[in-house]
View 1: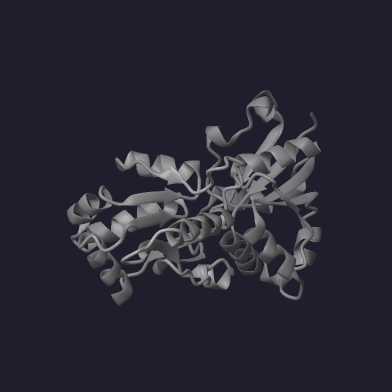
View 2: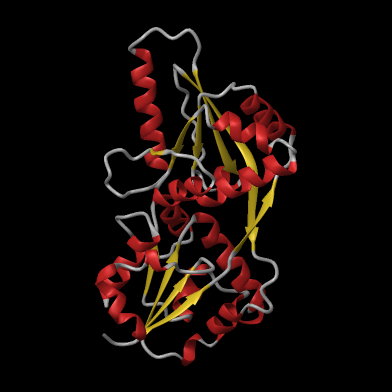
Length: 287
């Protein structure tokens, strides 16, 4: 295999993310793992009320959409001096997750959970969560309910801007999507070895692939690029930047990420498996 450059919009690529059939080819890969986003915890009235409801056993389900949402949720509960009560209450609730990485993160906190995608088609995305909710709603309507099924989803405030906020009204479900955190572009990248490595991209041999792992990382990537090289890219579109960087292919992790790329008029390939491993399988299928 010829040398290739893989730029990915996350701080690291884990060993479990690498497809098994390509591990012997890694010596030909130049990795550029870019820190692109910062997380800001939100201490709002709505968050405090959600934590209070959890400790009062108000909710029947809690749904987590990422490993980051799990970590931030528990950090906020600890900051609000409600960690012990929250842990106790969660042990009495049903916990649903978007995919295996989130499931593993919860396991590290001592909680079992079920994946929303019970068909095991490996397309871990918000679509699976919506399908899970619709199925639960249909099942509930088959039998008389005294009270609705109450569900909490700790969310990012960016979910509205990324157009993946769940706006469906369910007959038998009370769905509370509460903003526990916000996402912004990484501020302190001046000492980032990976961003410095990106600046040297033109000196590397081989085809270059750019992987985006979420809608927020797409937006943050270009904000940082404009800040770092305003003199060069100020009057250029995101599509122009991709062409100037001589990116061979842009890979999207899933439909919500693809939606942002479409808005920016960026040609891309969407991974059929919505995981980092899935995007890397796409890359290695193309080389």
